[in-house]
Image (cartoon, one colour):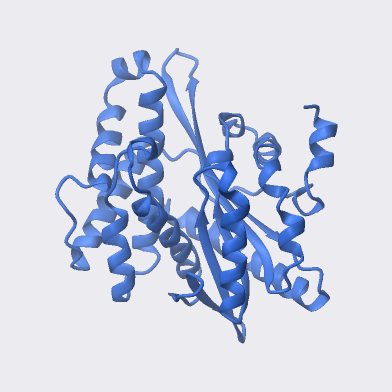
Length: 307
């Protein structure tokens, strides 16, 4: 498909999206492993009975081991890369959830954290995706909490935040296959409506992403990310017709092999977070844009100071 054909398929809300770096792009494996250890310590401080050898612990140990094993990196294949990428994502997202605040969170957050640290090392090894579904919900909770947006788990939908004088709903959904996307976003829209609030749909779009968007150039990253998501963006016109849906929050991570000048293999890891305003109501659009701009700026500050 040519670039012109792709642009015609993407909804206008997704075109010319301005991507900004929220974190230090030079974060290395030792720093990532350190964040994993910190997350485990925070869980212990909060009294969460983390099972010995849980996924978060294995991820931390694996990143620490691979950092020191150059020979393994040289001969490793895609399965090894996938485990490095998934381990990194596990650490980054659960570090956000455990360090969004120092104060011990409510019991429901602790219960979700206990669930999220478990599961298999990679999604393909899982019989149930419950742990990673909880991880995505906690990541969204963490990003809101870290930026001083009051956020709590409420059913329906999944989360409720306070911004200005309004309570907003967030329906967090992880899409495990592209074929289920319409059903998942439809359910999310229904959950927001059932909450009797306006709000956002937060979608983890991991299954759409390719390693093309893991490049070094930020503009290329954004273009490739949007290209990967063209099928998901195809659902935007449907969502835009829902007056209670203010916008779409899309997240996902990409990892690929790179080779340095001395021939050493490394893994490039990119974490994406896209916020699209969908409402065409003037008041709603102003409100949603103010929220997304404020959130993006505050997240940038948090990542710079913590990652």
